[in-house]
Image: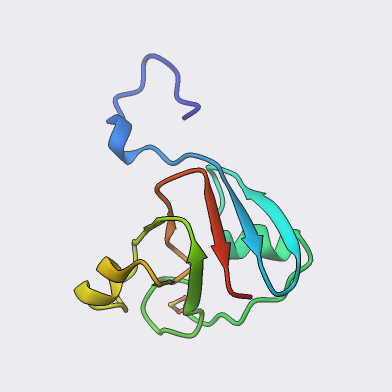
Length: 103
Ligand code: FES
């Protein structure tokens, strides 16, 4: 939330930074408001499987261990999204401050 007071972006559409922990790899990093989880993973030295990077193909599907995903993909169906057990890290984010992923 780094918008100046002159911006007209509603609070619910603003992106926030959050922490991601890759449980199997033991890697922990922050996803800045201006980058995707995949971009932050690469910056942290992890090599994720990706393809479309638009939330369409399903290549990057990742299991969520902890935290509440903010789904922004077109791949998962509504019940998968509601379960909160998987997310597409190329486009989706976190509703809270921390996500633990099974990577
Ligand atoms: S890379 Fe295609 S859905 Fe994430």
